[in-house]
Image (cartoon, helix red, strand yellow):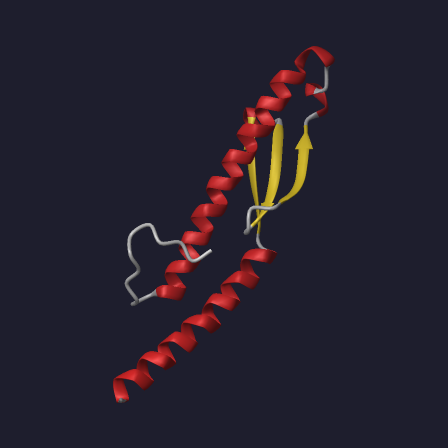
Amino acid sequence: MKDLMGMMKQVRDMQARMQKVQEELEALEIAGSSGGGLVAVTLTGKGDLKRVRIDPGLLKPEEVEIVEDLIVAAMQDAKGKVEAAVQERMQSVTGGLPLPPGMKLF
């Protein structure tokens, strides 16, 4: 019975840490860029788009397709950084508790 109580305490502690991490991720802003900084996007830690910045020199009608591709690349850059930040924070939450490979808590 003592083991069960200890395990329940671990679960409650993990839930509290998980809540804190989720709040931190909502407040976190991560920038990604492409084209040598000509296009930049900012995402929240949850992957929501907050801002897009485009260098005015790119805004020529004949270069619309290039700008669109750069926006996609900047989003992918920022998303990769968000995923790395989430992974880092999740390790602090689950520290010591083995999770099956590929299991995502978000």
